[in-house]
Amino acid sequence: MKSFYKDKNTFFIVFLVIVSLSIIYLNRFVGFTNILQNIYYPFGKFIHLVNHKIYEIKKYFNTLEYLTNENIKLKKEIENYNLILQDYEEVIKENNRIRKILNFKLREKKKIKFANVIGKSPDIWHKELMLDIGKNQNIKINDSVISYNSLIGRVKEINDNSCKVQTISDPSVWVSIQNNRSRSVGMLKSESNNKAKLYYLNEKSDFKISDLIVTSGLGGLYPKGIPIGLVSKVNKVSGDLIPEVYVDLLENFDDIEEVIIISND
Image 1 (cartoon, rainbow, N blue to C red):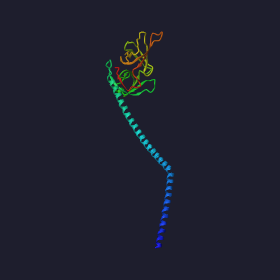
Image 2 (cartoon, helix red, strand yellow):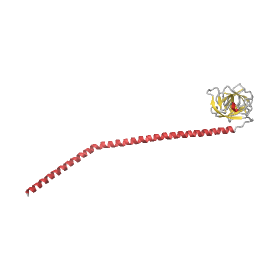
Image 3 (tube, rainbow, N blue to C red):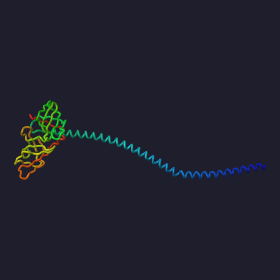
Image 4 (cartoon, helix red, strand yellow):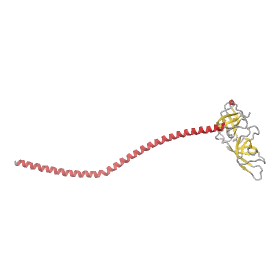
């Protein structure tokens, strides 16, 4: 009986020692764990921030790539729309030019033909145009060429299906003119693409700014009354009775695309 109590006391003592040691160990482990956590926390927070920033950067570049592709796509669409708009505007301009040509009326009854400009002289001195009709369409040398509102020039050379036109903007060309208001006559000679000067005037010549200058019909080269330009300047030189008269041509010769050919027969 005593042995039983002795063994029981021994077991109880051993149990208490184990429990005590366990409590001490656990307290030390928890303390060590807290220490590790305190050491790891700043590094863990830093790693979390770095990962978050990396995610944001990846997201930014993915968004940037998407926006860049969208921008390229939109630019291509805009370019396509611009081309369509340009074609549409060109069709409108062409229709307006054709309407004006069809509404053109001559003072005299003449045979007329419509032609397209297919070439222009590359040099600055010989102002010439190439048209898409010629001998097979009954075009002849010296036939007059006009636009819907003014004189262009005359046929200089002809081929079977094309012809060359010498324009009045050529500095070597002289045109007999008349003031539509005062009926004063003279000769016109181009000085640049759309500027000209009048020559062979007399003391009674009457020219004012904005007077309309037309063909006189003298010499028979051009029909009478075709508009040419407007008087832009009248200089009266001291001691000279004949003024210097300058004219702005009505036609911009760089922009001509369609013309009318008038038969001189």
